[in-house]
Image 1 (cartoon, rainbow, N blue to C red):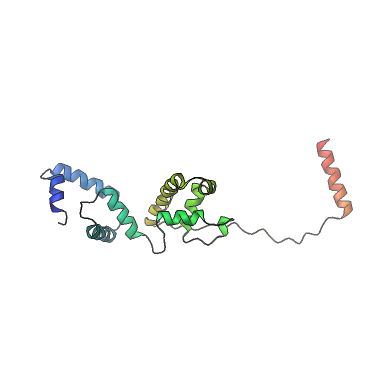
Image 2: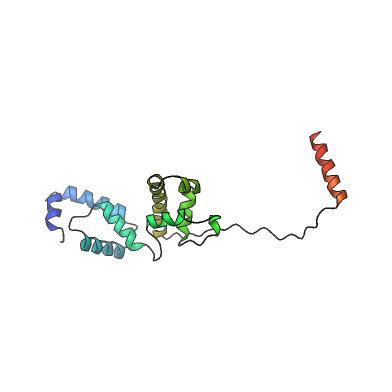
Length: 171
C-alpha cells in the first residue's frame, strides 16, 4: 500500500508480469524467515519513498537478520587489513571476518588498493554471511601447539655419526 501508484505503474493489470515478479522474489527471499522479511520491508518503507528493487530488499533482509556484533562489509574489510601477524592468533569480531580475509588472501589485503581488494573481500564475506543466515556456524580453527619435548642435545659422538650418515647419502 505504501507504494500504491508505483506498483500499479510497474504492473498495472498484468497478472502474468506480477506473478513472474512474485516467483522471482520468493525464490530469492525464501531462505529468510517471514519476520525478517517483514522487518526488512518496514525498514525500507521508513527509509525510501520509491518501490524497492529486489537487490535492495535482499540487502535489507541481510542487515536485519545478521547477528549483533557482525560488522558490515567495509568495517570487516578494515578489520582484516589492520590485524597484525600471525593473523590466526588475533582477536576477531567474528570468525567469518577472519575466514573471508583468509579466502580473499592476506597478500591481496595488504598490497592491493581498496578499490580492488574491497569488492573481492565483500563478495566472499557476503557468501559467508548468507551461509551464516542459513544456520551454518563458523569457527577459527587454530593449529594445535607443538608438543613439549624433553630432548637432550646430542653428544659429540652422536653428531659425528649423523654427519657420517649424511655423507653416505650423498656419495
